[in-house]
Amino acid sequence: MTARNILKGMVNSVKQAPISSIVILEIAPGVEVGSSVTSDSVTALKLKRGQDAYAIIKASCVLVGVD
Image (cartoon, rainbow, N blue to C red; front, side, top):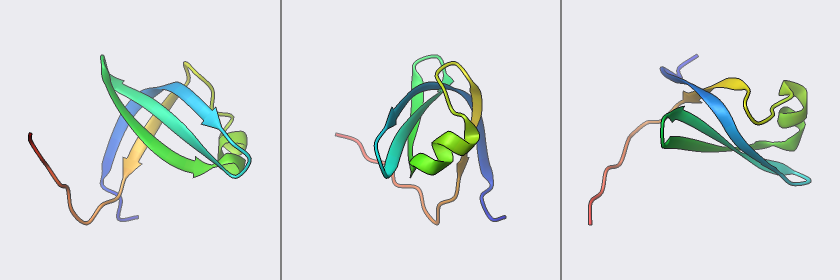
């Protein structure tokens, strides 16, 4: 597996739709990351608010911007 960034967090919300869902993890107080996953995966993983989970990040680059 080439995903090297793994952040432990807690499921803060799951916004489920018929095909895809948005899962928000709180990885530190006030720090959240979100992921779009299939709704089938949400069901298979039994994701729910308050559950421990991991954000596993695979990216070829990271962009940083300021205003």
